[in-house]
Length: 282
Ligand SMILES: NC(=O)c1ccc[n+]([C@@H]2O[C@H](COP(=O)([O-])OP(=O)(O)OC[C@H]3O[C@@H](n4cnc5c(N)ncnc54)[C@H](OP(=O)(O)O)[C@@H]3O)[C@@H](O)[C@H]2O)c1
Image (cartoon, rainbow, N blue to C red):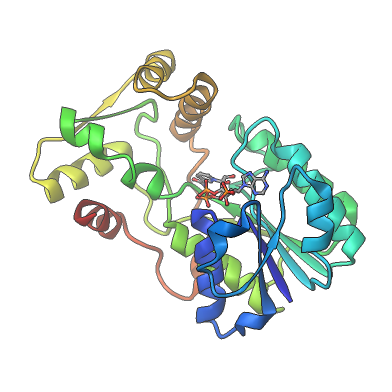
């Protein structure tokens, strides 16, 4: 039995769909979620699993062979939450755990990677056989936030001309499903990136071409970008993480030329042009 945590999230939903698409029977998949009412439409067994409530995790992982631990979206609390999940997986005797991490988690300078690195180390120390699915940037980080750029004619960032090897959530989900569904895909580390990296200027050009509007990329010093994000309504901590990530992009932290993602999914990753097109059709 395969247990997918955080299955009500964007990625988790796509993993469940990808597992079903690969032919994994629905009765061998469990969606382990914080809020079971949100998972009623998934078409698989649903169990409560709140990273902050260890007792729910023990019950959620009972009888599991394989667990996909999808990282939580609560920075600051994430490591404690993930540690609870790993402890529960170990107590339940799961034979394999896959964890959605971040590109080059062991060496990257990205601030958001701190929790991922600590979680990877904890999983390694647990002794549970594992794969780290080190996801690069989601294309959706951009495509779900085009409204201000279309309104003001400018994309903002601090990424300079750094390359971004982003892929769609559906690509990362397909890779996770490939690892969970096939014992032959159980390398310890997968560095997962899109196969056609782009710069912020290229993103602005693509958005401009497809929308028929003039869109420029305006590169800002980190502090100015952070302030712009806060002015746009983002919480300070989140704005800092995003601005820090852009500095990381400028330094090459979200580019990589390994082909692990394409190899796992057996097709090219979603192109920037396709992702922009889908977002504009909306
Ligand atoms: N690589 C990237 O570019 C990138 C970008 C954004 C995020 N991420 C990471 O990738 C993860 C998955 O992405 P996503 O797009 O699916 O994010 P998402 O849509 O925000 O989903 C996050 C999931 O985490 C669950 N969750 C949060 N706190 C939890 C808790 N205490 N116990 C159990 N579940 C909890 C949420 O449950 P509810 O449905 O109950 O809220 C939700 O299912 C994120 O959580 C984040 O760590 C990566």
